[in-house]
Each structure stands twice: as C-alpha cells, then as structure tokens.
Image (tube, rainbow, N blue to C red):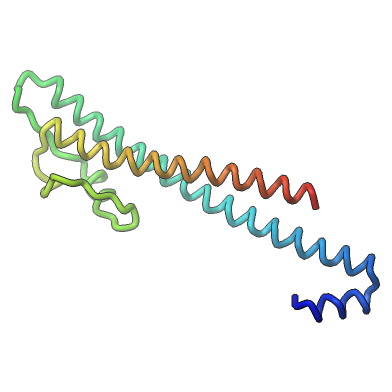
Amino acid sequence: MSKDEVVKLFEELGVFQAAILMFSYMYQAQSNLSIAKFADMNEASKASTTAQKMANLVDAKIADVQSSTDKNAKAKLPQDVIDYINDPRNDISVTGISDLSGDLSAGDLQTVKAAISAKANNLTTVVNNSQLEIQQMSNTLNLL
C-alpha cells in the first residue's frame, strides 16, 4: 500500500480499525513467507535424503571392491546412481572420471561418493538454515 492509501484507510476506518487491518496484512504476509520457506525446506530435506541414499549405494560398491581378494578389483555404479548424477537438476559434477558407466576402482568410487555426499551436506545445511529462518519468522509472528 502506498502512503496515500494508508492515510485514506486510517481516515475512513479510524485509527484502531485501520491499525488492526494493517497488522492483519503484516501477519498474513509473514505467514505466507513462513509457509513458502517450509515448502522449500521440505523439498531440500527430500533431496538430501535421496542424495544420502545414493551415497550409501556407492559406499556398498566401495565395500565390495575393498573386500575383494583381487587387488585390481573394480565395480560398476548402480544405474540409479548414474542417473542421479547425470540429472542436471542435481548439479553434481564428478571430476576426474570420464565414464561413470564403466568399471571403477575403489578410488574412483570414493570420488563419486564424495561428490554425492557434498551435495547431501549442502542440502542438509539448507534445511538447517531454513529451520532457523522459520523459527525467526515464527518469533516475528508472535510479536505481531
């Protein structure tokens, strides 16, 4: 609302009713922000869980390679992990490995796991920050 609109509102409704109306607008706006932040946090939480699941799948392959009696043992990534990494929405880049669908050594698998774990950690940070922001918004709502 512009300054003129606010002045007109106060003149038409009176100070008390206009103030209550203004507080209700502020409360609704703050509430809408909190709801939107919660939705964002929920999506980040789901994405973090998925990233951690993918890292665990890679970890299982690392365990297979490391427990092998063959010193040159290699393993293929599960297709779910390859698809997850290649999905541009996930924004994961694995440096130093050109073919994710080929046989990978334990070191290569560790590199893949580190890239996915970094994504999971970043998403967890987003969730934690969102929780703090929602708490701050709730405190603001309580002050109104």
